[in-house]
Length: 207
Ligand SMILES: [Mg+2]
Picture 1 (cartoon, rainbow, N blue to C red):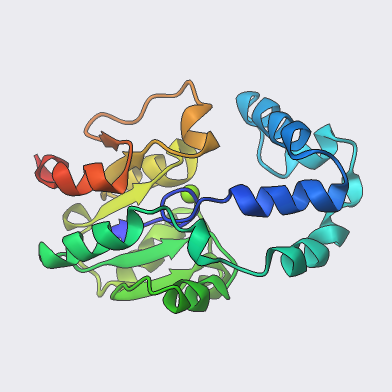
Picture 2: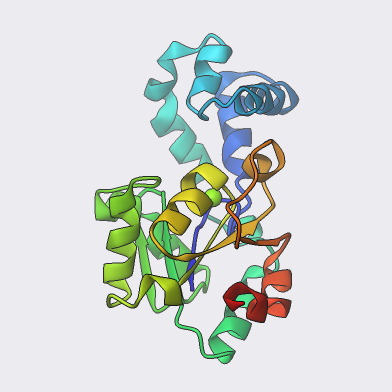
């Protein structure tokens, strides 16, 4: 079982609140702008052009300082119980996602345990590139792709490319990318609304 991080394990609200604060606009306005951009099929980077803030890249260090990395309160509350339940059911766990390299240690520090953990910033390849999923399988010791489920919140970054890689796609519908989409997942995708539900419906991922 391979899991994404943002909006799968981690509620990213706080990092976007930090962006709103650094940009000196209200969180309500920033989040609404993000929603408008996502609804148009844009990438999160497009929100800065939408807001007329092309200099945003220069603000990254300020945001990183204010954010301070993942905290316990950023973890969705179902994460640790679900990972324990999956481990108890005999699954090997991998956490491989689009994140800066330091997030691996931050997750470990928060007590998130997995057999394999690596971020795109360490791998040098990121989703939705097919090579990302090849790299993830290699880290897991090259199991048959069909024996691995990939759990993620984004159809474009997680579910589509994981299915194309031959993995079992599990779409967790939380976070803005899962809510603001008119796309439908590929057939055979298990659709869940929480990791608790994943544990309850695990057998369906393989049927
Ligand atoms: Mg995500």
